[in-house]
Image 1 (spheres, rainbow, N blue to C red):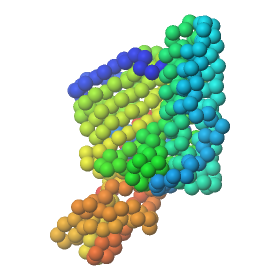
Image 2 (image 1 turned 90 degrees about the horizontal axis):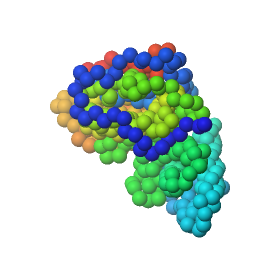
Image 3 (image 1 turned 180 degrees about the vertical axis):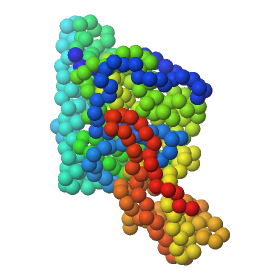
Image 4 (image 1 turned 30 degrees about the horizontal axis):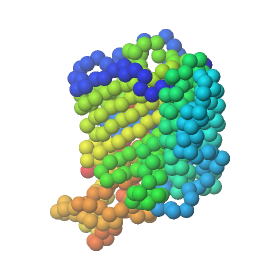
Length: 425
């Protein structure tokens, strides 16, 4: 029987204002083989005193999508998928018209199977778009429009799943259908997120244009954006999700131990105000952490014991800056605090003598990304080596920077700190 997600089944742990000395994390007690190999790992970056991040491993394709208003129809990402909004009304009417329990049971089974086909088509649409992007057949913007369209459909489909779950809970002998609905809810959770949703709002003219960083590795995808003073990142790794295997966690303490391994600073730090994890039926766990830098939501699959979905919000004003590199030219000093691929990078320009803020246009690898405010600007960091130029009234200054590469041990899922380049004074 397939494992699956049930909304808000049982809240196992809620820890508020727990002191750092509280023993939440200990040695893993399981006699199993441990976490399976994965295509992405939760890793520590920049410094220990901030949250770890689900980074995509292996060969990746990266770029920037400039989401702007597009009144034309979104790329045909969901061709063949029935409008979920209309379906919800149809399902409700069919259930109301069912005169017997057997008829209601039949309707629920039929509608669940039909929805499963539509969810599978959504998955295929996203996978096709990711593959075409990696083959350089579509642009960053086209990929983002597909993902935004899938996001909208997935959210509506999730609403329909909830309707069907509520109805199925009132009818006996629908265990298999309930399990299937819960599995669909897990699959849908990998297809929507805050960055995709925001991109859709931009395309519809409901939000201002935004620069989005994209990283793709096979079926895995990570998106990040800076909105105002908030850095937002979502990452999904379907390979870390196994719907067909059983939960390998034998106890609550093993779950807590694993969470502590994956997110040591966020889960055990005394700066975290609320730490919770929710056990969804059949071995899926959602971790929520409110900490001094922002919020973390992470989904762990009990069979792989790895993270398949992660969402992070961070205030750029509160989180620690990464290791910096600096250059001085034309009387201006530009300092770049580096980060991981798609991570938040701070650019700061000052007068080389007085130290006063310098206003100017910031370019990353030749592309204008904005102007400094009080001498500073947060941007999304590219992959590999890149150049940041600040063009001010006194002239240009260019800094060569590099994306931080985390250091991990050969054992999958082990979290270790990054070995950053030495700071330049």
